[in-house]
Image (cartoon, rainbow, N blue to C red):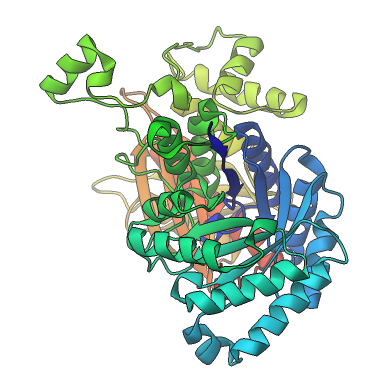
Length: 514
Protein backbone atom coordinates (compact mmCIF):
# COMPACT_ATOMS: atom_id res chain seq x y z
CA UNK A 1 0.00 0.00 0.00
CA UNK A 2 1.30 3.46 -0.92
CA UNK A 3 2.30 6.00 1.70
CA UNK A 4 1.09 9.59 1.50
CA UNK A 5 3.47 12.51 0.89
CA UNK A 6 2.42 15.95 2.17
CA UNK A 7 2.80 18.57 -0.56
CA UNK A 8 3.81 21.90 0.99
CA UNK A 9 3.63 24.61 -1.66
CA UNK A 10 5.71 27.74 -1.14
CA UNK A 11 5.05 29.45 -4.50
CA UNK A 12 3.49 32.44 -2.73
CA UNK A 13 6.48 32.83 -0.41
CA UNK A 14 9.73 31.36 -1.72
CA UNK A 15 8.51 31.50 -5.31
CA UNK A 16 7.82 35.20 -4.94
CA UNK A 17 11.50 35.72 -4.13
CA UNK A 18 12.31 35.20 -7.82
CA UNK A 19 13.64 38.58 -9.04
CA UNK A 20 10.78 40.72 -10.30
CA UNK A 21 8.12 38.15 -9.34
CA UNK A 22 6.41 40.07 -6.53
CA UNK A 23 2.67 39.41 -6.39
CA UNK A 24 -0.02 41.79 -5.23
CA UNK A 25 -2.80 40.79 -2.85
CA UNK A 26 -5.37 39.96 -5.53
CA UNK A 27 -2.84 37.80 -7.40
CA UNK A 28 -1.90 35.90 -4.24
CA UNK A 29 -5.53 35.17 -3.41
CA UNK A 30 -6.34 33.98 -6.92
CA UNK A 31 -3.28 31.76 -6.98
CA UNK A 32 -4.02 30.39 -3.49
CA UNK A 33 -7.51 29.39 -4.61
CA UNK A 34 -6.02 27.56 -7.58
CA UNK A 35 -3.44 25.84 -5.36
CA UNK A 36 -6.27 24.60 -3.14
CA UNK A 37 -8.08 23.30 -6.23
CA UNK A 38 -4.82 21.60 -7.24
CA UNK A 39 -4.94 19.75 -3.93
CA UNK A 40 -1.80 20.91 -2.10
CA UNK A 41 -1.84 20.07 1.59
CA UNK A 42 -0.23 23.29 2.81
CA UNK A 43 0.14 26.76 1.29
CA UNK A 44 2.94 28.96 2.58
CA UNK A 45 1.22 32.28 2.00
CA UNK A 46 4.09 34.62 2.82
CA UNK A 47 6.25 36.29 5.44
CA UNK A 48 3.93 38.58 7.44
CA UNK A 49 6.78 40.41 9.22
CA UNK A 50 8.20 41.52 5.85
CA UNK A 51 5.72 44.31 5.20
CA UNK A 52 2.20 45.52 5.82
CA UNK A 53 1.32 44.39 2.30
CA UNK A 54 2.58 40.86 2.89
CA UNK A 55 0.76 40.71 6.23
CA UNK A 56 -2.51 41.71 4.56
CA UNK A 57 -2.01 39.21 1.73
CA UNK A 58 -1.38 36.33 4.15
CA UNK A 59 -4.37 37.39 6.24
CA UNK A 60 -6.73 37.46 3.26
CA UNK A 61 -5.43 34.14 1.93
CA UNK A 62 -5.98 32.64 5.40
CA UNK A 63 -9.57 33.82 5.44
CA UNK A 64 -10.23 32.51 1.92
CA UNK A 65 -8.68 29.02 2.07
CA UNK A 66 -10.72 26.41 3.92
CA UNK A 67 -9.19 23.02 3.09
CA UNK A 68 -5.40 23.42 2.87
CA UNK A 69 -3.26 24.44 5.81
CA UNK A 70 -2.14 28.07 5.54
CA UNK A 71 1.42 28.67 6.71
CA UNK A 72 3.17 31.89 7.67
CA UNK A 73 6.97 32.10 7.78
CA UNK A 74 8.73 33.67 10.77
CA UNK A 75 12.31 33.98 11.86
CA UNK A 76 13.14 32.53 15.27
CA UNK A 77 12.10 35.77 16.97
CA UNK A 78 9.07 36.50 19.10
CA UNK A 79 7.98 39.57 17.14
CA UNK A 80 8.05 37.64 13.84
CA UNK A 81 6.03 34.80 15.35
CA UNK A 82 3.47 37.21 16.83
CA UNK A 83 3.11 38.86 13.43
CA UNK A 84 2.76 35.48 11.71
CA UNK A 85 -0.04 34.42 14.03
CA UNK A 86 -1.79 37.74 13.62
CA UNK A 87 -2.00 37.04 9.89
CA UNK A 88 -3.15 33.39 10.01
CA UNK A 89 -5.23 33.17 13.18
CA UNK A 90 -8.50 33.06 11.20
CA UNK A 91 -7.32 30.25 8.95
CA UNK A 92 -9.21 26.98 9.10
CA UNK A 93 -5.89 25.13 9.50
CA UNK A 94 -3.11 27.56 10.50
CA UNK A 95 0.58 26.64 10.74
CA UNK A 96 3.50 28.72 11.99
CA UNK A 97 6.80 28.02 10.23
CA UNK A 98 9.87 29.30 12.07
CA UNK A 99 13.51 28.90 11.14
CA UNK A 100 17.12 29.56 12.07
CA UNK A 101 20.37 28.56 10.39
CA UNK A 102 22.30 25.55 11.69
CA UNK A 103 25.39 25.30 9.47
CA UNK A 104 28.73 26.37 10.93
CA UNK A 105 29.32 28.86 8.10
CA UNK A 106 26.04 30.61 8.92
CA UNK A 107 26.65 30.47 12.66
CA UNK A 108 30.08 32.06 12.30
CA UNK A 109 29.53 34.64 9.59
CA UNK A 110 25.83 35.51 9.69
CA UNK A 111 24.39 34.76 13.11
CA UNK A 112 27.61 34.97 15.13
CA UNK A 113 26.13 32.51 17.59
CA UNK A 114 27.34 29.29 19.17
CA UNK A 115 25.63 25.99 18.58
CA UNK A 116 24.12 26.09 22.05
CA UNK A 117 22.74 29.55 21.43
CA UNK A 118 21.14 28.35 18.19
CA UNK A 119 19.46 25.44 19.97
CA UNK A 120 18.20 27.80 22.67
CA UNK A 121 16.83 30.27 20.09
CA UNK A 122 15.15 27.47 18.12
CA UNK A 123 13.51 26.01 21.23
CA UNK A 124 12.35 29.45 22.43
CA UNK A 125 10.82 30.15 19.01
CA UNK A 126 8.93 26.86 18.91
CA UNK A 127 7.67 27.31 22.46
CA UNK A 128 6.56 30.85 21.64
CA UNK A 129 4.68 29.57 18.58
CA UNK A 130 3.12 26.94 20.83
CA UNK A 131 1.25 29.69 22.65
CA UNK A 132 -0.82 30.09 19.49
CA UNK A 133 -1.06 26.70 17.76
CA UNK A 134 0.03 23.08 17.96
CA UNK A 135 0.80 23.05 14.22
CA UNK A 136 4.42 24.24 14.19
CA UNK A 137 7.11 23.66 11.61
CA UNK A 138 10.79 24.26 12.31
CA UNK A 139 13.37 24.60 9.54
CA UNK A 140 17.12 24.28 9.97
CA UNK A 141 18.30 26.77 7.36
CA UNK A 142 21.28 25.48 5.34
CA UNK A 143 20.57 22.06 6.78
CA UNK A 144 22.38 20.21 3.99
CA UNK A 145 25.68 21.89 4.99
CA UNK A 146 25.10 21.39 8.72
CA UNK A 147 26.85 18.83 10.89
CA UNK A 148 24.45 15.83 10.79
CA UNK A 149 24.78 15.07 14.49
CA UNK A 150 24.15 18.72 15.42
CA UNK A 151 21.12 18.69 13.14
CA UNK A 152 19.77 15.72 15.08
CA UNK A 153 20.33 17.58 18.37
CA UNK A 154 18.46 20.62 17.11
CA UNK A 155 15.53 18.57 15.82
CA UNK A 156 15.34 16.54 19.01
CA UNK A 157 15.17 19.75 21.06
CA UNK A 158 12.51 21.48 18.94
CA UNK A 159 10.35 18.35 18.77
CA UNK A 160 10.45 18.17 22.57
CA UNK A 161 9.45 21.86 22.57
CA UNK A 162 6.40 21.16 20.39
CA UNK A 163 7.42 21.15 16.71
CA UNK A 164 5.22 18.82 14.68
CA UNK A 165 7.20 19.16 11.43
CA UNK A 166 10.98 19.46 11.10
CA UNK A 167 12.45 20.50 7.79
CA UNK A 168 15.87 19.91 6.22
CA UNK A 169 16.47 22.63 3.61
CA UNK A 170 19.14 22.38 0.96
CA UNK A 171 19.13 26.17 1.02
CA UNK A 172 21.88 26.77 -1.51
CA UNK A 173 21.30 23.71 -3.69
CA UNK A 174 24.64 22.19 -2.69
CA UNK A 175 23.72 18.56 -2.00
CA UNK A 176 24.03 15.61 -4.36
CA UNK A 177 21.21 13.02 -4.36
CA UNK A 178 23.11 10.18 -2.69
CA UNK A 179 24.55 12.62 -0.14
CA UNK A 180 21.09 14.01 0.64
CA UNK A 181 19.69 10.48 0.94
CA UNK A 182 22.34 9.71 3.58
CA UNK A 183 21.63 12.93 5.47
CA UNK A 184 17.87 12.33 5.64
CA UNK A 185 18.48 8.71 6.64
CA UNK A 186 20.91 9.84 9.36
CA UNK A 187 18.35 12.27 10.79
CA UNK A 188 15.66 9.61 10.77
CA UNK A 189 17.86 7.04 12.46
CA UNK A 190 19.55 9.30 15.00
CA UNK A 191 16.86 11.70 16.22
CA UNK A 192 15.36 9.85 19.17
CA UNK A 193 11.89 11.41 19.00
CA UNK A 194 11.58 11.78 15.20
CA UNK A 195 8.43 9.62 15.18
CA UNK A 196 6.60 12.53 16.87
CA UNK A 197 7.09 14.83 13.88
CA UNK A 198 6.82 14.82 10.09
CA UNK A 199 10.22 14.98 8.43
CA UNK A 200 10.24 17.52 5.59
CA UNK A 201 12.68 18.50 2.83
CA UNK A 202 13.10 21.79 0.95
CA UNK A 203 15.56 21.78 -1.95
CA UNK A 204 16.91 24.51 -4.22
CA UNK A 205 18.02 24.01 -7.80
CA UNK A 206 21.43 25.71 -7.99
CA UNK A 207 23.00 22.57 -9.47
CA UNK A 208 19.84 21.44 -11.26
CA UNK A 209 19.30 18.69 -8.68
CA UNK A 210 16.33 19.94 -6.64
CA UNK A 211 13.87 17.32 -7.88
CA UNK A 212 16.46 14.53 -7.71
CA UNK A 213 17.37 15.53 -4.15
CA UNK A 214 13.70 15.71 -3.15
CA UNK A 215 13.00 12.25 -4.51
CA UNK A 216 16.12 10.95 -2.73
CA UNK A 217 14.89 12.51 0.52
CA UNK A 218 11.45 10.97 0.13
CA UNK A 219 12.96 7.55 -0.52
CA UNK A 220 15.03 8.01 2.63
CA UNK A 221 11.88 8.53 4.69
CA UNK A 222 10.89 12.20 4.50
CA UNK A 223 7.14 12.59 4.12
CA UNK A 224 6.72 16.26 3.30
CA UNK A 225 8.07 17.86 0.12
CA UNK A 226 8.35 21.64 -0.08
CA UNK A 227 7.89 22.75 -3.68
CA UNK A 228 6.89 25.59 -6.00
CA UNK A 229 4.86 25.57 -9.21
CA UNK A 230 7.15 25.74 -12.26
CA UNK A 231 10.11 25.48 -9.87
CA UNK A 232 10.30 29.26 -9.39
CA UNK A 233 12.14 30.73 -6.43
CA UNK A 234 15.32 32.27 -5.10
CA UNK A 235 18.28 32.18 -7.56
CA UNK A 236 17.90 29.03 -9.71
CA UNK A 237 14.57 28.18 -8.09
CA UNK A 238 13.03 25.50 -5.91
CA UNK A 239 11.95 21.93 -6.37
CA UNK A 240 9.27 21.84 -9.07
CA UNK A 241 5.87 20.67 -7.78
CA UNK A 242 4.88 19.16 -11.11
CA UNK A 243 8.12 17.21 -11.48
CA UNK A 244 7.91 15.66 -8.00
CA UNK A 245 4.20 14.87 -8.22
CA UNK A 246 4.39 13.34 -11.68
CA UNK A 247 7.54 11.38 -10.78
CA UNK A 248 5.68 9.81 -7.87
CA UNK A 249 2.59 9.28 -10.03
CA UNK A 250 4.43 7.83 -13.04
CA UNK A 251 6.91 5.69 -11.07
CA UNK A 252 4.73 4.57 -8.17
CA UNK A 253 5.95 1.07 -8.99
CA UNK A 254 9.41 2.10 -7.80
CA UNK A 255 8.76 4.54 -4.96
CA UNK A 256 5.39 3.43 -3.58
CA UNK A 257 4.40 6.97 -2.60
CA UNK A 258 1.36 9.05 -3.52
CA UNK A 259 0.03 12.58 -3.08
CA UNK A 260 -3.38 14.21 -2.85
CA UNK A 261 -2.74 16.32 -5.95
CA UNK A 262 -5.38 16.49 -8.70
CA UNK A 263 -2.89 16.15 -11.53
CA UNK A 264 -5.42 17.50 -14.06
CA UNK A 265 -4.98 20.91 -12.42
CA UNK A 266 -1.19 20.97 -12.94
CA UNK A 267 -1.18 22.65 -16.33
CA UNK A 268 -3.81 25.32 -15.48
CA UNK A 269 -1.89 26.14 -12.30
CA UNK A 270 1.39 26.37 -14.19
CA UNK A 271 -0.12 28.80 -16.68
CA UNK A 272 -1.57 30.95 -13.91
CA UNK A 273 1.76 31.16 -12.08
CA UNK A 274 3.54 32.13 -15.30
CA UNK A 275 0.91 34.75 -16.01
CA UNK A 276 1.03 36.27 -12.51
CA UNK A 277 4.81 36.34 -12.17
CA UNK A 278 5.75 37.02 -15.79
CA UNK A 279 8.27 34.18 -15.61
CA UNK A 280 7.98 32.28 -18.88
CA UNK A 281 8.12 28.49 -18.68
CA UNK A 282 10.98 27.26 -20.86
CA UNK A 283 9.69 25.17 -23.79
CA UNK A 284 11.65 22.07 -22.77
CA UNK A 285 10.56 22.25 -19.11
CA UNK A 286 9.48 18.84 -17.83
CA UNK A 287 5.72 18.20 -17.55
CA UNK A 288 4.49 21.76 -18.25
CA UNK A 289 6.79 23.05 -21.01
CA UNK A 290 5.34 23.73 -24.45
CA UNK A 291 7.41 20.86 -25.89
CA UNK A 292 6.74 18.36 -23.10
CA UNK A 293 4.27 16.45 -25.27
CA UNK A 294 5.45 17.64 -28.70
CA UNK A 295 7.01 15.28 -31.24
CA UNK A 296 8.86 16.50 -34.32
CA UNK A 297 11.13 13.61 -35.23
CA UNK A 298 9.51 11.34 -37.81
CA UNK A 299 10.38 8.17 -35.92
CA UNK A 300 8.81 9.58 -32.75
CA UNK A 301 5.67 10.73 -34.58
CA UNK A 302 5.26 7.33 -36.18
CA UNK A 303 5.69 5.57 -32.86
CA UNK A 304 3.22 7.80 -31.01
CA UNK A 305 0.61 7.35 -33.72
CA UNK A 306 0.92 3.58 -33.41
CA UNK A 307 1.06 3.52 -29.61
CA UNK A 308 1.33 6.64 -27.44
CA UNK A 309 3.42 4.79 -24.83
CA UNK A 310 6.31 4.37 -27.28
CA UNK A 311 7.45 7.94 -26.67
CA UNK A 312 5.11 9.37 -24.02
CA UNK A 313 5.37 8.18 -20.42
CA UNK A 314 2.47 10.42 -19.31
CA UNK A 315 -0.95 11.02 -20.80
CA UNK A 316 -1.25 14.77 -21.59
CA UNK A 317 -4.79 14.73 -20.19
CA UNK A 318 -3.41 13.57 -16.84
CA UNK A 319 -1.76 16.96 -16.31
CA UNK A 320 -4.68 18.97 -17.64
CA UNK A 321 -3.91 19.23 -21.36
CA UNK A 322 -7.32 18.56 -22.88
CA UNK A 323 -7.61 17.17 -26.39
CA UNK A 324 -10.99 18.87 -26.80
CA UNK A 325 -10.94 22.26 -28.45
CA UNK A 326 -13.69 24.82 -27.95
CA UNK A 327 -13.27 27.51 -30.62
CA UNK A 328 -14.41 30.99 -29.62
CA UNK A 329 -15.17 33.99 -31.79
CA UNK A 330 -17.30 37.10 -32.02
CA UNK A 331 -20.54 35.07 -31.99
CA UNK A 332 -19.66 33.18 -28.78
CA UNK A 333 -21.90 33.81 -25.80
CA UNK A 334 -21.02 34.53 -22.21
CA UNK A 335 -21.69 30.94 -21.13
CA UNK A 336 -19.21 29.52 -23.68
CA UNK A 337 -16.60 32.06 -22.63
CA UNK A 338 -17.14 31.21 -18.97
CA UNK A 339 -16.79 27.49 -19.72
CA UNK A 340 -13.52 28.12 -21.55
CA UNK A 341 -12.22 30.16 -18.61
CA UNK A 342 -13.10 27.34 -16.20
CA UNK A 343 -11.35 24.80 -18.44
CA UNK A 344 -8.24 26.99 -18.31
CA UNK A 345 -8.43 27.16 -14.51
CA UNK A 346 -9.92 30.65 -14.07
CA UNK A 347 -12.98 31.16 -11.88
CA UNK A 348 -14.15 34.74 -12.24
CA UNK A 349 -16.68 36.57 -10.13
CA UNK A 350 -19.85 37.90 -11.80
CA UNK A 351 -18.32 41.37 -11.96
CA UNK A 352 -14.99 40.09 -13.33
CA UNK A 353 -16.76 37.95 -15.94
CA UNK A 354 -18.79 40.92 -17.15
CA UNK A 355 -15.65 43.04 -17.48
CA UNK A 356 -13.76 40.22 -19.17
CA UNK A 357 -16.60 39.47 -21.60
CA UNK A 358 -16.68 43.08 -22.76
CA UNK A 359 -12.95 43.00 -23.54
CA UNK A 360 -13.34 39.58 -25.16
CA UNK A 361 -15.96 40.97 -27.55
CA UNK A 362 -13.72 43.92 -28.42
CA UNK A 363 -10.89 41.54 -29.31
CA UNK A 364 -13.22 39.18 -31.18
CA UNK A 365 -14.27 42.03 -33.45
CA UNK A 366 -10.62 42.34 -34.51
CA UNK A 367 -9.83 38.64 -34.87
CA UNK A 368 -11.56 35.72 -36.56
CA UNK A 369 -10.73 33.22 -33.85
CA UNK A 370 -9.83 33.58 -30.17
CA UNK A 371 -7.34 30.97 -28.96
CA UNK A 372 -6.43 29.84 -25.45
CA UNK A 373 -3.38 32.09 -25.47
CA UNK A 374 -5.59 35.10 -26.21
CA UNK A 375 -7.84 34.21 -23.27
CA UNK A 376 -4.83 33.92 -20.97
CA UNK A 377 -3.53 37.28 -22.11
CA UNK A 378 -6.88 38.96 -21.49
CA UNK A 379 -7.09 37.47 -18.00
CA UNK A 380 -3.61 38.80 -17.24
CA UNK A 381 -4.41 42.25 -18.59
CA UNK A 382 -7.95 42.75 -17.30
CA UNK A 383 -8.25 40.64 -14.15
CA UNK A 384 -4.78 40.08 -12.68
CA UNK A 385 -3.71 43.67 -12.34
CA UNK A 386 -2.61 46.04 -9.63
CA UNK A 387 -4.63 49.21 -8.91
CA UNK A 388 -4.05 51.65 -11.73
CA UNK A 389 -2.20 54.82 -10.83
CA UNK A 390 -1.76 55.41 -14.56
CA UNK A 391 -4.20 54.50 -17.33
CA UNK A 392 -3.70 54.80 -21.07
CA UNK A 393 -6.48 56.82 -22.69
CA UNK A 394 -5.03 57.10 -26.18
CA UNK A 395 -1.75 56.81 -28.03
CA UNK A 396 -0.86 58.25 -31.42
CA UNK A 397 2.56 57.63 -32.96
CA UNK A 398 4.09 59.09 -36.12
CA UNK A 399 7.15 57.31 -37.52
CA UNK A 400 8.82 56.43 -40.76
CA UNK A 401 12.03 56.59 -42.76
CA UNK A 402 11.81 60.39 -43.21
CA UNK A 403 9.80 61.36 -40.09
CA UNK A 404 11.06 62.07 -36.59
CA UNK A 405 9.37 59.43 -34.38
CA UNK A 406 6.80 61.32 -32.31
CA UNK A 407 4.30 60.08 -29.73
CA UNK A 408 1.20 61.89 -28.48
CA UNK A 409 -0.23 60.35 -25.32
CA UNK A 410 -3.21 60.97 -23.09
CA UNK A 411 -3.08 59.36 -19.64
CA UNK A 412 -5.29 59.31 -16.62
CA UNK A 413 -3.02 59.90 -13.65
CA UNK A 414 -4.88 59.16 -10.43
CA UNK A 415 -8.08 59.85 -12.32
CA UNK A 416 -6.96 63.16 -13.83
CA UNK A 417 -6.50 63.45 -17.60
CA UNK A 418 -3.04 64.54 -18.73
CA UNK A 419 -1.72 64.99 -22.27
CA UNK A 420 1.86 64.97 -23.51
CA UNK A 421 4.07 64.53 -26.55
CA UNK A 422 7.68 63.56 -27.11
CA UNK A 423 10.30 62.21 -29.48
CA UNK A 424 12.49 59.12 -29.62
CA UNK A 425 14.80 57.13 -31.85
CA UNK A 426 11.84 54.94 -32.82
CA UNK A 427 8.07 54.81 -32.24
CA UNK A 428 8.30 52.70 -29.05
CA UNK A 429 11.13 54.82 -27.65
CA UNK A 430 9.06 57.93 -28.35
CA UNK A 431 6.07 56.45 -26.53
CA UNK A 432 8.19 55.40 -23.54
CA UNK A 433 9.92 58.79 -23.32
CA UNK A 434 6.61 60.61 -23.39
CA UNK A 435 5.01 58.38 -20.75
CA UNK A 436 8.09 58.65 -18.50
CA UNK A 437 8.03 62.48 -18.77
CA UNK A 438 4.29 62.62 -18.00
CA UNK A 439 4.53 60.33 -14.97
CA UNK A 440 7.80 61.75 -13.65
CA UNK A 441 9.32 58.27 -13.64
CA UNK A 442 13.09 57.81 -13.53
CA UNK A 443 13.01 54.05 -13.92
CA UNK A 444 15.44 52.17 -16.15
CA UNK A 445 14.26 49.75 -18.81
CA UNK A 446 16.13 46.53 -17.96
CA UNK A 447 14.37 44.18 -20.37
CA UNK A 448 12.11 44.43 -23.39
CA UNK A 449 10.74 41.43 -25.24
CA UNK A 450 8.05 40.90 -27.84
CA UNK A 451 6.22 37.68 -28.62
CA UNK A 452 3.39 36.77 -30.94
CA UNK A 453 0.88 35.06 -28.68
CA UNK A 454 -0.68 33.12 -31.55
CA UNK A 455 0.05 32.47 -35.20
CA UNK A 456 -1.34 34.33 -38.16
CA UNK A 457 -1.15 37.86 -39.54
CA UNK A 458 -3.76 39.06 -37.03
CA UNK A 459 -1.93 37.64 -34.01
CA UNK A 460 -1.84 39.57 -30.78
CA UNK A 461 1.52 40.85 -29.72
CA UNK A 462 2.61 40.41 -26.13
CA UNK A 463 5.24 42.77 -24.77
CA UNK A 464 7.08 42.18 -21.51
CA UNK A 465 9.21 44.85 -19.86
CA UNK A 466 11.22 44.83 -16.66
CA UNK A 467 11.68 48.19 -14.98
CA UNK A 468 14.10 49.15 -12.20
CA UNK A 469 13.88 52.12 -9.88
CA UNK A 470 15.70 52.63 -6.58
CA UNK A 471 16.46 48.94 -6.19
CA UNK A 472 12.92 47.82 -7.04
CA UNK A 473 12.29 45.52 -10.01
CA UNK A 474 8.85 45.36 -11.56
CA UNK A 475 7.44 43.38 -14.45
CA UNK A 476 5.04 44.92 -16.94
CA UNK A 477 3.00 43.09 -19.57
CA UNK A 478 0.77 44.35 -22.33
CA UNK A 479 -1.08 42.76 -25.24
CA UNK A 480 -2.60 44.23 -28.36
CA UNK A 481 -2.75 43.48 -32.08
CA UNK A 482 -0.75 46.72 -32.48
CA UNK A 483 2.73 46.09 -31.06
CA UNK A 484 3.38 49.77 -30.28
CA UNK A 485 0.17 49.95 -28.25
CA UNK A 486 1.10 46.67 -26.53
CA UNK A 487 4.47 48.22 -25.63
CA UNK A 488 2.84 51.29 -24.12
CA UNK A 489 0.44 49.10 -22.12
CA UNK A 490 3.34 47.00 -20.83
CA UNK A 491 5.32 50.09 -19.81
CA UNK A 492 2.33 51.57 -17.97
CA UNK A 493 1.62 48.22 -16.31
CA UNK A 494 5.22 48.13 -15.10
CA UNK A 495 4.95 51.70 -13.74
CA UNK A 496 1.76 50.74 -11.88
CA UNK A 497 3.55 47.77 -10.35
CA UNK A 498 6.43 50.01 -9.28
CA UNK A 499 3.96 52.36 -7.60
CA UNK A 500 2.37 49.38 -5.84
CA UNK A 501 5.73 48.10 -4.66
CA UNK A 502 6.71 51.52 -3.30
CA UNK A 503 3.57 51.48 -1.16
CA UNK A 504 4.10 47.83 -0.16
CA UNK A 505 7.83 47.40 0.49
CA UNK A 506 9.16 43.93 1.20
CA UNK A 507 12.08 42.74 3.27
CA UNK A 508 15.37 41.92 1.60
CA UNK A 509 15.35 38.31 0.28
CA UNK A 510 18.42 37.55 2.39
CA UNK A 511 16.21 37.92 5.46
CA UNK A 512 13.62 35.54 4.04
CA UNK A 513 15.47 32.43 2.96
CA UNK A 514 14.93 28.80 3.88
